[in-house]
Length: 243
Image: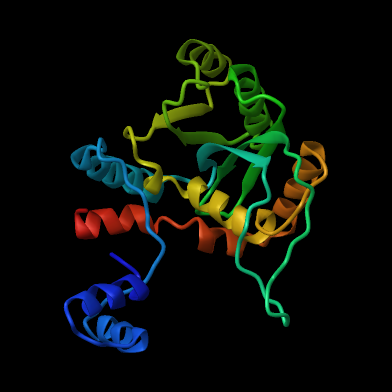
């Protein structure tokens, strides 16, 4: 929907005068909300998403203490300075940064919504060898436990090489998200939180510095905070609302 300024202009063309505040209050009174848009893929299959949510929640409820469920995803960060909200006592919030673009940092991450544990690693490349190394780090981090790893079918998750790895690590089982379903992945919400809390309004001199700061940030966040950010509510919501 349009913002209050464009709505005000629309009404003026219809010869109806209304202030932006009046329009805002009217929209709120009608139950409206002015929020940031959430993108959903038109190709997503709701039936597959519902089945995944039901199956996954059932699996998580039945897990024993020797099993951990992890949700995996990748993020690429860097380039231009990211603008975000921040406090200031001046008229404007100004972040000074050079005009050049640094190399991007490729980050692989997993989160456990039930324990708040995170495994996160940065690599120069986002290709299959980096993903295989990340799988090894996951296996090492939870050695002695059974691991259920949820991930998408992104091309770096080479089916052939992943199968080879799983044969050597029988305690690690992989489950796949339905296509075009990022909203069902708790790790996506961690990336959003990381960008908002750490990356926005901040300049890094190099990809290495960014990777170091992100790694330090992960270690500083309490597990309770992670569980709040990366909850299973999106899975429960899709089952409740069916949309």
